[in-house]
Figure 1: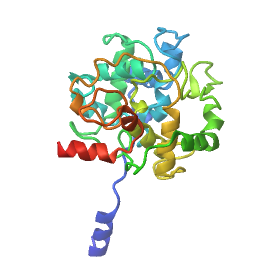
Figure 2: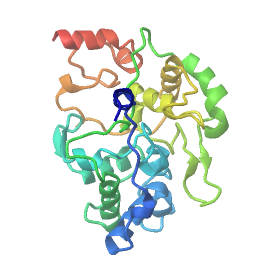
Figure 3: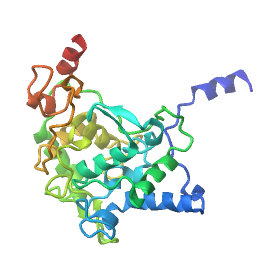
Length: 298
């Protein structure tokens, strides 16, 4: 290869993770388990919602309301690194967690529901789907595009009032003026666009209740038509609308066993006690840089 072509090839940007082609799922019993797992993620409410055909253990949202495109979209809270990184130690529980434990965490927090039996057919299917999505990802590795991108902290507190303006202009059309979401008109269960607050939304223990998680998620995926390479919001708009959404009422949850080592709490975890002297208000809305700087000094 000529030197110029070699230089161009080496300078090509790394492409984010792409999910395996669903057509590659084998027509075997193992493949059927993977397909069922994918369907459970895409249409959770149909199986496990208030009128579910298998159980009634969730709030009516679908897993893919938060893990976009059934957990396959780059920086859309995807599942690319689940099989490669679990089991792993998580500071939130202070324990080594399995994939099954992580799935149940989502059911109990983001879907404000109850845990699945870890030996159930449904759990086995979800885990099989996540292993299939991780095909080709080396053990211990997180591919580019996994999870949610982390935005640069603001130099001010995130502002719910400014966020309300962003919500009205950019979010209300899909999620409703009252954040109630839009039911799926085709399946008759679940949501096409999920409720962002209220009794049917995620509870205070969900990962997206942390502003940094919600802001990064919103920036790369919202409003409709946005993507990691086609952002429609500025970083400030993403932080502010995240603050507005997470200042609205939602279901409660007992968090007394979370973060057993308080010095491991993230800077934007809005519930004390803390290993620092910053207020719960600042831990929720910021500014976060003083908190991070104080932690580094310790």
